[in-house]
Length: 496
Image (cartoon, rainbow, N blue to C red; front, side, top):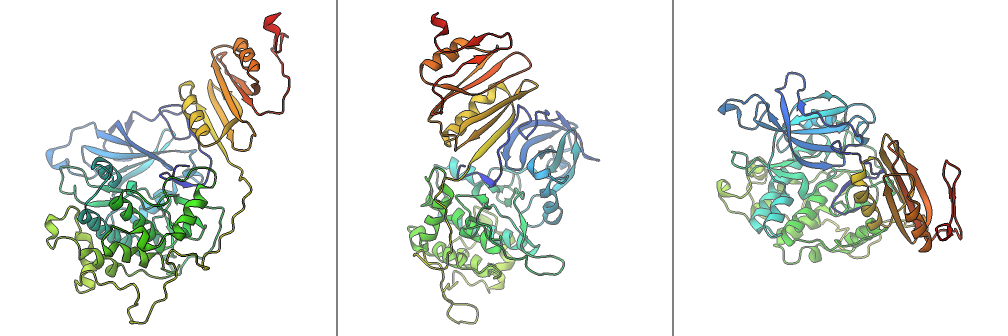
């Protein structure tokens, strides 16, 4: 699992193009939901753990006044989720419920139409611009202090609005913050997208907090930016979004986080351990003081503690230009919170609460006893499956699995598409495979036998093609196979 990918632990699933969403069903070429305009599918914008997003271009050209972002815009963002995808286990995507509550609030893009067409649940939204990761990547992996401080101000404001509605985002990272469309009045405005991992931190009806729980076997989020509490499987609350934001800000400013680079089965554990041992001072070295103060504050928040968003914003407001009109990011949404602290600039003291009583610091990056972490050194079971895979995509999935230490343990075929199961616990030391247009390629099999590879999986397709997987490190010392015509093949037969 790459530390930049969002996950809620589950198996991977891929398909033949162009669906990419758990099914070989092609995406519709034109989209029309309810009384929406008709859109023609254009370029792909991206793919996440809960669907894929394309540009939809309105077929009937709108008037000039309609070309601004909105329901009648010339271009919109269209999100597809196949009805069999993991986000649609109980009908319409869970993300729809979240957008029903949050759509249109400050910093959350508007959803204009939702519905089902063909095999897909479809959501039509405002078209936005580049992500903060795109901006950082296109700027030689750097951002100015003022730019990151403005991002901090506006992001805290967006999270405050979202939290006030009873939700935590659950996957705060540079890729999920987008700017408005270039060349429009919103091009400097910040938006938070991808609500597929959002959860409630309180019951909006009663106002009561959700029940605290801890499940160390469950992880939701992105390894690089997740809070320590998320790594430990603790119920998400407001503190987790702010901790992830802190890591996002440091990444954008410094270009790297101390826990990047871990690989292998235990990467999540090692990243968590490194986060727990990294002090705010070490994490924020070479950063202006407000960044260290912000990190120190958010990592010490309690599960049910209400963050002081206004004071957090006042930290960063003190290191940006005084004229909001020329700031690199629009911070209008945060002005109300700034006013709440009397426009005091940069005075958040992490050692004191509002009542001026000393506040005990819990997490300072030293080995501390507050973390209860149970780790089983036994190699965990790891398995991945892909189905509805076309011939042309086999190499991609197999290569990625091999990079992650997985080998093919089983293959199958249906309707000339392939299914693969890849495991970490096979015991194989190396593996080769052959996709042949006929059944079976005996010369290739004989050649691999000579190299001490043995058949460990094979399947045939309706069109007569076959997929044969051969591995080293098996328990076999000798092997043969028999085809339907009764012909036996075994090592040495070609030499007879």
